[in-house]
Amino acid sequence: MSSPSGPEIISLGCRLNIAESETIRALAAGREDMVVVNSCAVTNEAVKQTRAAIRRAARTRPDAQIVVTGCAAQIDPASFAAMPEVARVLGNADKLRPESWASAEPMLVTDLSRVVETAPHLASAFAGHARAFVEVQNGCDHACTFCIIPTGRGPSRSVPAGLVIERIARAVALGHREVVLTGVDLTSYGHDLPGQPGLGLLVERILTHVPALSRLRLSSLDSIEIDDRLFDLVTGEARVMPHLHLSLQAGNDLILKRMRRRHSRAQSVAIVERLLTARPEIAIGADLIAGFPTEDEAMAADTLALIDDAHIVHAHIFPYSARDGTPAARMPQVPHPLRRERAARLREAAARRRRAWLADQVGQTRAVLVERPGTHGHAPDFADIHFSPAAEPGSIAQVRVTAATETHLIGQLA
Image (cartoon, rainbow, N blue to C red; front, side):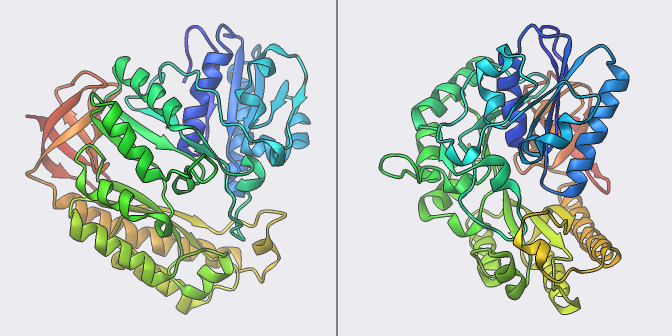
């Protein structure tokens, strides 16, 4: 979204990019002549969308300087520098340094294997967002065979708890009622800090030291790393939102092994059952990949069944995308039409389960964080609710649900 005193920022991909875009907004303050495309590289389609966003920005803002950053720029900077629309390319570490925005160098891309610091905490507000996105971790030390993101983000590194708490307190003081903790591999938080404090301890400290924070939400979690402390907080603390997005990826053990994931299908189902037994209102989200190399029909059926077995109502489904330089790209590939067909089956099953989940909420009154323009927002379980009359964006409104559609709820202010 654009700002009257800064660049227009087009943020693609994950919530971590949203958080970092606000730091960029602060670093590049006063540059109304600039468009920053904060790119994503999680799939080939994401890279195509980045290129399309660059060309669209050039058409709509022909006099603006276009700067490309983010994971796609980090991984393949030369290809973006070669685009005639692009004035500058900045790597993922460079985009968060004040000197990069003061420089005129056409390409600044630091080797992330040598990066040990975390992002600066310069964002004071989150333009256009009801919730604040706070980066607590970056990078990844795992080596999933399908994933290019460690190349784009570097090794895992964590923000000390004191800085996280300071930033959250500032966001709350500025009026944000909800904060989302973001990271590339959020559940690895703290492994690089003195004493190796985990994500659960960070959440505990936030709740203790920022009592005015109404709602704390976690972004994607690796289910195998949910320890007892984090489990107890997620299931027992009302201020921690009952919405967990799990990086499950597949529902077949052999495919999970070939992905080099660290969990089994049974472990995925078991953690969800434990969570829902302890706190039944938790809504489960998951990432699932269709058509991973070597996947046959029986393996695909296991992943399809996981949508019901793991009670998934917020599904992010991707046809497998081969990324150059990853081990999976060298494995026997599933034909593209079959990948798309299997992804369509997964989406159909996920939509069916989501419809039933939404329909069950008709007649309930939900606490909704109101988002712009004031006629919709999200409940604690991240159900999307549209309502009337309008309420103040950023406030928490009580909404009585009167109907459900295929994708969202409809209600009236209570």
